Length: 241
Image (cartoon, rainbow, N blue to C red; front, side, top):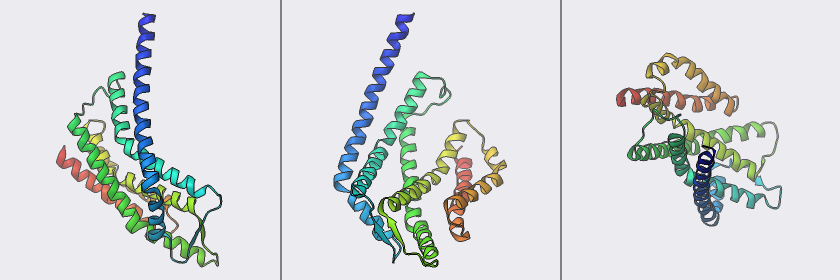
């Protein structure tokens, strides 16, 4: 029995090693290609579109720009590999544990989930990039300037902040798919979301207050889309389940 257990463990470790190598290869290819081709353009595009007029960017270390390009490229490589990582995680949990024993997702369903999730993420990023962040950053700039402070932003800090905010909006826009998945697979009931509707609303505006300055308008621009997507999610789940 001991030999069998050790053999089985060795097979699992070998399988995981092979899968990890595949993930690293995908990330490395996306990392290198994006570093060479688009990382610098991404920085210039963000600077051109979102840096408030009158503000300036500086770098405080010799390698700051290079490290920023490497981080952006690594993030792109990870996003490229993310669908494969999610698939492997699901398959491993399904085959090796009983956590997902009640779930059964076909390849066609998984493809639909990936496509819909990608579309929602892009929509969230677009909302943050084109509507929320220009107003948000302009408010922060005007607030500092009213105190007689000159705006000199660190390049890496500015870009990292933009990427963080866009990631948050991309995740917020996943709400309809997330709620549908929970109800569709019997993890929770639609009535539960309806019953705690007011609690969710309060939570949404608390999140808006945390990630935005103390300004009602910008807080509403975060909280209201979350409320809207919550209601859209309830409607979609009601129709599709």
